[in-house]
Image 1 (cartoon, helix red, strand yellow):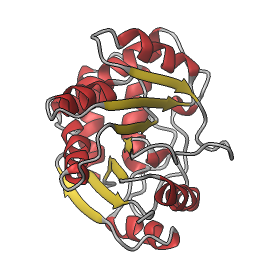
Image 2 (tube, rainbow, N blue to C red):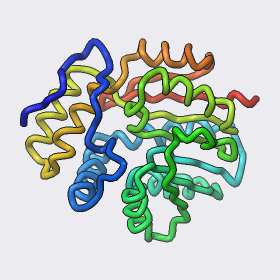
Image 3 (cartoon, rainbow, N blue to C red):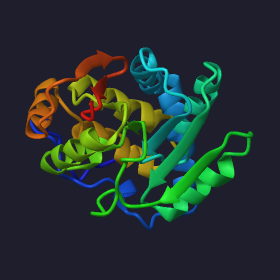
Image 4 (tube, rainbow, N blue to C red):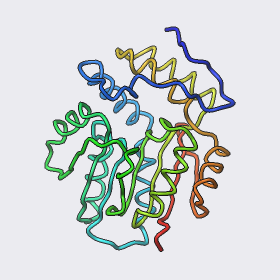
Length: 242
């Protein structure tokens, strides 16, 4: 497959993914979501988010617990969160947000196992959007879709609003990550969207220094940034409310 975007590991790519089209829908999106779920499960990436939530609530006995997933996609991460949190005897309120109403409908249809999860089609760039009534904000493979300056503004706002904190799980931009996912998706994927978007997602990912610059611009001083397999950054930001 020929890629029209530039392969450059020195700076974050500004090219748009096919998934950035908020009107995308149909069989190609369904296939893409299934394959992304497989990739995240097979590579162990979902554990990065679950582990981050566990760290935030370890010393916080707040119950019930309100968790919002931004860029929730088909709800896979929220379903895993719900199952995991229930084992810890927390009473949870789970809310998934995605700007694409077609994907939100997929999430609703896939959440049929008794978990109480609410889904809303909302663009987080709407000036009126707020997470002030939520305890924990999670973002899994979502924030690389945003320009670094926009991201700094968003994190600054959420940091002041979230009651407990923020958990971010996103990609480390690295040549090995790029060429590995390109080879993997070329081998097994039946989705043109996955074959195009997955390598580009890595190019839109972050280095440690870039995260540190974003957090500095956001005015966030207290955080924990760690690297996890496979080429994931786990960023935990305690609330700025306290």
